[in-house]
Length: 353
Image (cartoon, rainbow, N blue to C red; front, side, top):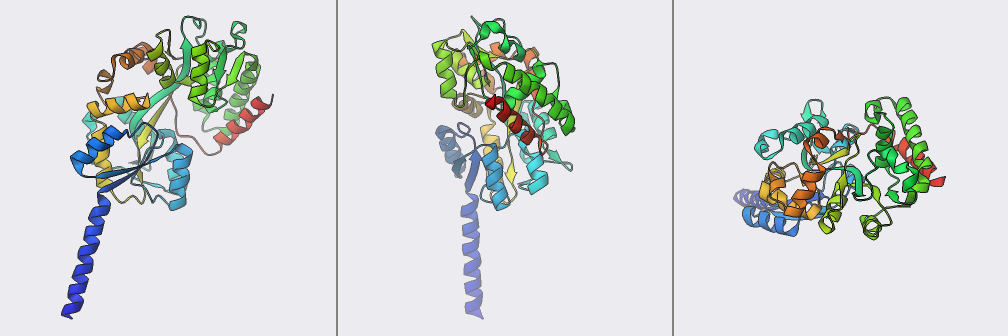
């Protein structure tokens, strides 16, 4: 009996040690640039928690977590519009404990917007980290006539614009045509009608397209050479070009840039929640967030972090995002099931024309 008790005690002790060791590793599923080496090193030095990073994107995050029922990772960073649907369908996340978040570190509007858009049955599943928008990367010395998406199709810009054949092009063009596709998210019939209208305009606009870009390097090369005057792009592309020549920058359409927020979300079967909350609060410190802004090219929901970035990055941001522009951002709402199938089919039709 004594031997049995000793063996049981020893096994329990080993289990506790193993559990503690496991809790000292944070398995992070995130985007490129969101966990720079210098930030990881500083976090590990301060907390003793090791960080294992797996780079991903929205579709891959959902696929990985769906396959495991929310296991294998302790913290993920899906976009706010990709949480509600997958959570309701697959249950791959666990609710956030907001009491463990230092809310004072966040820009209030971004915190509230992300909590609201990721709430299911009264429980929030995501909080804002990095945000940005889609609009135009532009040579402002030659693109002064481009104010809305429809302007990309003006005859004087024939062969001088670029875009991706992705949902941002459809949605942006829909807003440019005076519609509000987000308001039709709950009505698939109406939504398809608006997307067909936008797709027809994109097809009409094809003679103006120098090339459809797929990677940022392709777009940057076309912009630098002067082949392309304006392109549908993320704001980070405009900021990067601004750093090379201030004639470039991100320009928001008058109808509003399309805004996204990448969040922090806890996988349903994550095993290191305390480490996850420690990482979240750490990277939301303004001085740490500024490092992530520089690495990712996109801005943080960390309050005051925009004041700590490089002068060039700060100037590009402040020129592009005046208070009026920010107030007019059209934030992506959660994507209902089936809408992306409609978009994909219509984009394939545009590509084939």
